[in-house]
Image (cartoon, rainbow, N blue to C red; front, side, top):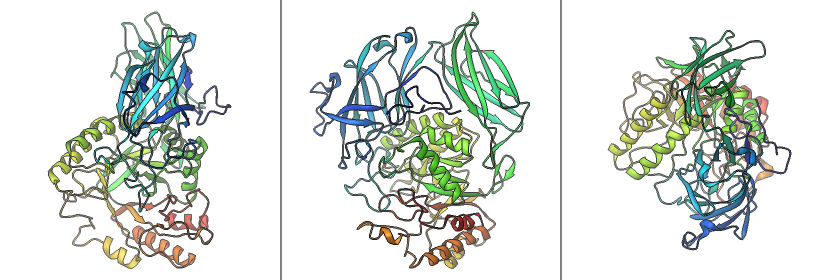
Length: 582
């Protein structure tokens, strides 16, 4: 399944359908040229900007104003800004529920239709929707304005790797403000599906589809149909939110990196007269992840993870891929380098990325952009938990995601009580929303309650690395043994290592703040030798069940990628793949 807008052949940027696992025909892509204004004095509301019919500047949505692709390229801090464009509601949307979707807006926003507020949202990474049915009329045009606030230096909002200083440094990079994913309109019957939760049951040879409706009436029903090129089946049930439809599969073919097989799904809602009121196209993978002892299992077989750290930054789009093809290509580049998946690092990737991971057979860990917030404060915790809930619900149907990672590298920041409270809350929230996947509460450290035990080490000397990671009195290396829970035999993974700095000769000098871990190799052959020996150390220790190498590409001044920032090759990729697959 690969759904595109009716305008996919036009000049619209990112014209493809943004939510391919929940596709409807009636939708309009709102990407393209919008007007905009920065509001450095934070006085726009007083000046009536919410009713503006056009600002002086122009910006190409969905690219953030910091990016070159937006046509703006403003790199300094932007605490407030406004967007505006006209929207036209088709006449044949009469009687439908009309939804305004935002793939991502960083950080807080409020939308206005013809000067009237239609909704607010907090969170720079989660997708969200405003129901604007009461504010628009079919067959008419309306004025849409979006107000954005993004205080990256507040300490209470998640940033990921966005830099809190003017100039990027270390592992902190250019900021993203405002709209950074597709904006779109959709028409849905008032009795239509709001969402579905699809749980694969490999052992039971079935898919469990649990719907949520906007509204239901007596006599309404849901028909769920699965199909493959050689088989098909269906099941039906009275429509009730939270009541599942069970799809028993006569053709059982598990989803795995070696065979990323997907079942096509068609979800049809009928009213009491048997008339179709809603149709949604979807897909699912029959995939199981579980833990036995200290080993992670995929489809009931032990599975060694060869992951790479992927930060999802682009030279011209920052957090936004320049094209759908670029998302796909990043996965293909990683697979070519010998990895079977990625830890998606300090960024919530857009749904199209997960779609390509599902299609291509690429394992991922879903991670939140937790850096930038003070994990010991109550406002930070409140901001984190509400947005993390939205992210899990949006992405939990993707078979390629095999673990959740709410935090990265957190430790005792002066109040261990609040630190642990938030980590345990995040763990329990994640497990309640999705008990089918393990949770790595904090990548690296400091663990409070976790299903996976992860550590970070950038020891460059392979001999010293082996001494560090070897068992001592039966216990593995831990980053902060005096600040975290006791290790209880969970699967043990080194989910950050390497980070070997290498800059090709034709790219030197790159920047005055170029950066990588440790002392970089002096020659290309020394790079290969060091990498080969580091990976060999990890593979030689039987208590280690997987690794994650830092990183897939260079990002701005951080130059320790397997590829350059522009995705061109640094190395002999066949040799690199042999090293990681050893």
